[in-house]
Image (cartoon, rainbow, N blue to C red; front, side, top):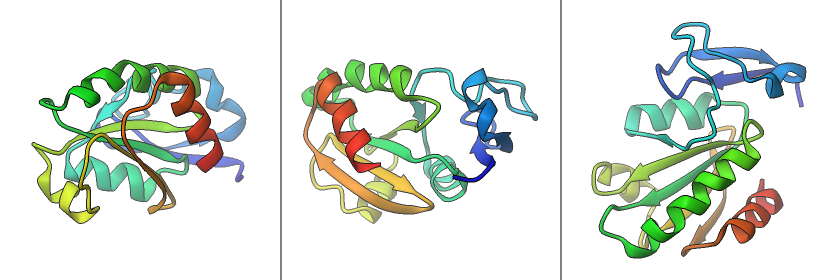
Length: 144
C-alpha cells in the first residue's frame, strides 16, 4: 500500500489525502470537518457512488438493498456492525435500488440484498443473499 491514501468524504464528497499511518486516528474531512469514518454505512446516490468507488484508495463494500426487502432489513444491523468493526480499512456503503435503479441496472443486480466489493474503481467480489455479522466479516476479509 502507498504511504498516503485518498479517502472520499461520505458527507461532502471531498477527496482527502490521509497518511496511511494515521488512518486509525479517526481523520476528519478537510472541507466539511466531519469524520471520514464514523462506523456507519454511507447512503450513496449515483454521484456519490462514482466518487467513492472511483476515487477512494480503500475497498468499498456496497450493500444493494431495498426498503421492502425483508432479508435486506434483517441484514442491515449486521452490515452496520461490520462497518464499525472493519472501518477504516474499508468504506461501507448502501445503495437503495428503488431510489437508484440505474445503478442496480448498471451492475446487473437481480436479487437483493447483493453485496459487492470495489477496489480501484472495479468490482472484485459479489455475493447475493443475507449474511450474519460473522459471515459478512469473513467474506469481506477473504475477498478484499
